[in-house]
Length: 337
Image (cartoon, rainbow, N blue to C red):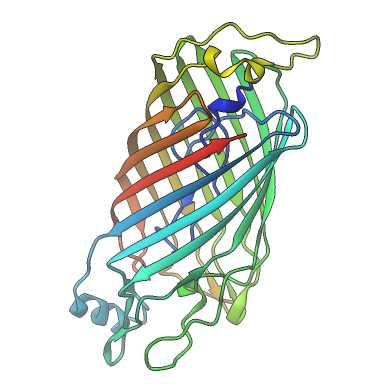
């Protein structure tokens, strides 16, 4: 089913957004169902569009200054922040019944960034600014029905600033900048199975990092997961499909539509490769983490939707240059037209 007014634009995520490893949020998907980072294969009908706002607040584990300094003595440029914030504005448009394109532009902030050095710990301020824009296209292969599958493709554009400086005037490393300066291809897929009010959804995105600012190439990023969701209330009227399988449910009058709630839980993860600076591999960079995120989403009959999720790590192996994660709070607000 392609119910336009049900699209909760929890626009991508990160997945990552996400701000866990190289402090740059990954691309997020778009479409209804799934969790808050796991997204379904559904698309908008041709000529319709949607807009959304999402927020990801990541709280890392804190490492004392003496630990950062000790790692610096080992040649590891370890860092910490009080928190990482990513607020993204996105929009999507249905080119056809099967093809939807989207764009997402983030604003990022890293509060009280500090990094170990041979002199102790450097206080690098709280760098913030517009980040890199993600452009994605989703092509839904299946027609309306209980099973869905879609392919994803796109690119991350170097729109973010790469010239932020520390309080002492020194230019920050690329991984601490709002932008990366690189053009990164993105590929992925999404699939779902629905049985009555219950839906099982899986999605994944792979971002291929290229050379960016300051001769830096951040690690490739893989993010994905599965989500189980259940719809409560808002029994929907029967919808009609034409000979091509197109769903005309969104053309029903407003009084025929119903609001509903979705409860969901997702198991998702991210893996980021090691970064390279000047051709040299930073062995202490990158890593992997997985989290469990329960959440809830409200779908209004008028086309608005709002979602919230709280992610806690269930497993993580993040190398020493980056701290482990404590939790992540994710919020989204969307409107379909």
